[in-house]
Image: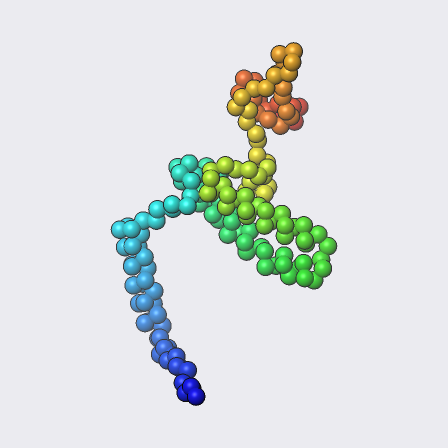
Length: 162
């Protein structure tokens, strides 16, 4: 017969005083600053074009990371609404999950594939034409809402400007 061994009991830490806790927090802060200076993060899984964007760019690395975090924080409440059977919560959850996946894909490959951007998808992306297409008569094909460099405007939106 195998002998039964008693499971190890984990020793609890002694509680820290407020002064000890503040000193430990300060030491940890100093250690993190030192590590950040000597060994900065390399972000090997982030596309170089994304990292090259300045922080004031609408699609900068820092902004997109904060949007991902904010949308991931919304998911638990949406899951609860789905379980409760709230109308429209399933589609809202799917939209947020898809948006998170789009943002993560952008960080990985540098291509923004969503039609909207921003923390709450409040801003619309404007497509840009990089190569013109022509019909059989030689007339350029154009799509409404697309920016054409030869015109210098967003096609079909000139009425919306006024």
